[in-house]
Image (cartoon, rainbow, N blue to C red; front, side, top):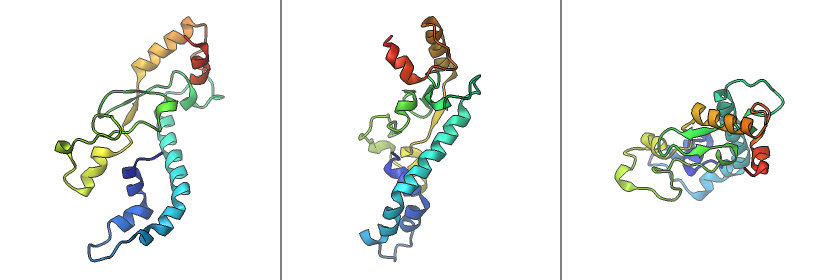
Length: 158
């Protein structure tokens, strides 16, 4: 799921949020945007997955979604360096020190444009070192790193 900040950047919501101050905004102002929310979230997820897939180096096999491979490991660029696999992509939020629900106000955004930079859900990178470690573990378990999914690796119960 996108964070509340991501939803605020969807054009359908951003347009309302950035109306001139004289404009009265009520709950009803968001009715159309809320009706579109399931589609907006699905589109956001597809765009995010496409960006993440583009970060993954090409593999020998094209039969497995690169995001499902056990060797596909991302890390958080801006905060805690968390190890993030396919299962974790959607829950990881960059809310200051990566602790969902905890916002430290001394580092608060100074304006609306700065808000996404402080609270957005986007700064992941493909972690080549951790991916290589995972590939080594898979080879030790007699598995093909270019074919083994994260789910299959979990089922090995190593």
